[in-house]
Image (tube, rainbow, N blue to C red; front, side, top):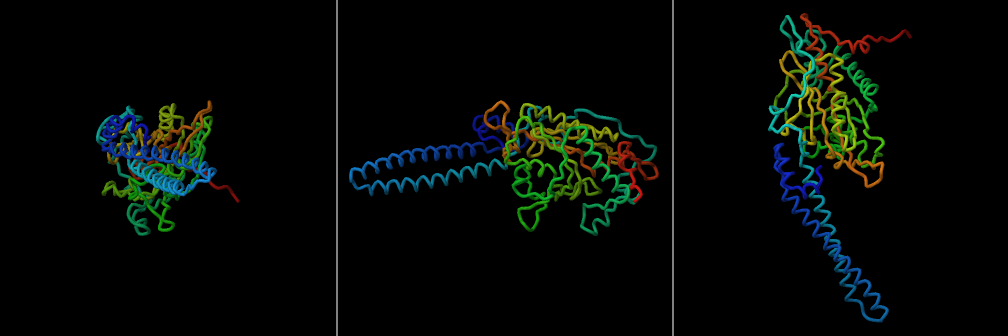
Length: 424
């Protein structure tokens, strides 16, 4: 959520910044509501002073033996008016918050300006596309040949956009989760978490999924304010909702595995083949809480940690900075990591690493206490996929495929696949 004070002090700058990401901000409404709120507060303070003065007069009248009935009626009238205005102030503040909950974050000045992904800027490319002396297959055909991906039986169990992973694919998924967690914990200084996979409405509001993206969530019938988590970003970020952290704990880095559940209501038939866009998928998520002064350095570090997974797996990929019109709702700046898929002859997103600045922290009330004293300040929150596990399986299957339909396993994963139970 944006800072109201910034909107009021820089209305034109805020309106222009949001316009760069295709959002038409009704700044005048925010200004009008704030003016009404301030006027009501001023009137409440005046009435309270008048009431206090009348109360003092009553004391003097009683001491003098005079009738204070009229003044008591006046105090009662003033009290009722104060209650009405207090109620109106609460209504205005609720209306202001509801309006700002619909506003996206301001894009960082370093983001390329453009309406969609066509304006994204390529920052770097790692590795080279694998070459084949045969026509490369996609992961769906490879999964059928090796009997490792079963979409038909998943549809029989649940419906479209689910998969049953079998044999090597299932073991590869499990190996990747462990490999990613070990790397982020042992090399990148993250604390491993295993959070709940169900979250309530307040958590989704805190990270920006609600109220904007309700149609993309799976909601439980009972209790009705529970939802399946769309990403570990939601439970991990909200773990510190309403808290004041100590500055010497920052940056606070977490790594968490969760399954993710998304209705994909806005996909409109895109990527219906295979595992690219499913209703259920696994992710290892990186979430960081940082001081505002260091958050963009932390973004570079977090992006590097996600890249380290791809490099250790030997997967050809690139990093792009998202244009203003392609940014996610809560993000101020995002790097997308895109992995090469030979079957499509194109890069596909496998991770988004974002700095939300204080946008989520304001919604979830997450602050830190400066070590040198002073009032608590809002932290900056960051997160990134480190990585989307199913898409990593796809990339391995396609980039490491052989002519007979099998595929090799990256060396970094072999220790996780070669282990066997010892004798009882």
